[in-house]
Image 1 (spheres, rainbow, N blue to C red):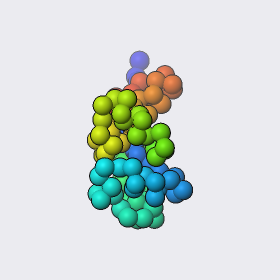
Image 2: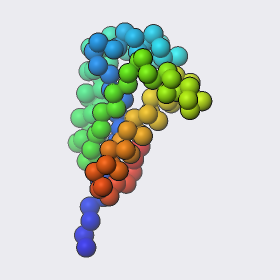
Image 3: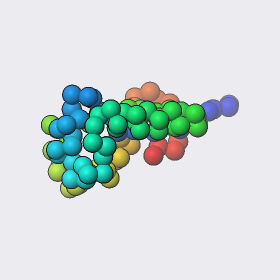
Image 4: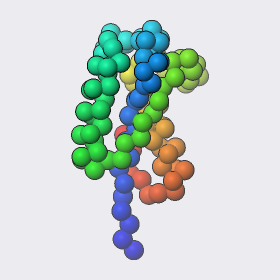
Length: 106
């Protein structure tokens, strides 16, 4: 049986109406682009590169009202490390729901 391994990657994603609040709650907000437009341009470029490299990208939307509690419940700072973990978990849950064979979750 020939089974294809799919590389699924979670990417942190924001809604435009949440971006200002995201900047207020993140402890490393100075590392993020100052505007949603700047962030979106960088994110879409990164998404295109990953797709071109054969990855399936799962957008992991972060809600600035609930994300701090999610971080606290796991003993995490509200920063890039937590955002990336959240995105990886969203990708993993997506893979489990699809019952596909997934490898290389980042």
